[in-house]
Length: 203
Image 1 (tube, rainbow, N blue to C red):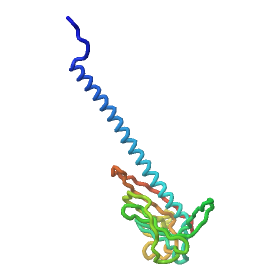
Image 2 (cartoon, rainbow, N blue to C red):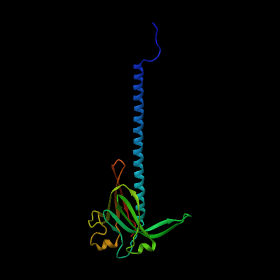
Image 3 (cartoon, helix red, strand yellow):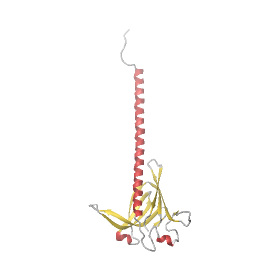
């Protein structure tokens, strides 16, 4: 009886199925790894943008100053704030120069927006300020302002408005600190919350 060399059709089918399952498993593992990498990369990018945005706000708040003896011109609500600050700029040679500026932060169309007028323009009332959106995907901006507490057990208390309605003394002063809550939406629609408390050193 002669023996025939080679594979039968059933054997070829079994090998094909095993090979297909192996390729499918490798592809599935690759897609899972790629998806995880994309999510991690997107999250890292989001955290970096939030950190840089909060650092910019912190730098400008720490350079805040009282505009006038009877009115500090620091105005804050739960979703926006405006104030006068010292703005630093660098020329081509790396030399630093400083100027006064009026700055306003607020949320417009789910973007954190910064409006600014600089120099002599900052002193003109009612002037339309130039604005730029520098952080998108913002679901919530929540601001609170620390005032010296009238209760001896606490150093300060948080409030949603600065100055508090009808408080003439607060109108002349700056808050002790500003608390910022920033909620951003990721690509998968999940929300990430960032919090920062910034003390004010200006008097």
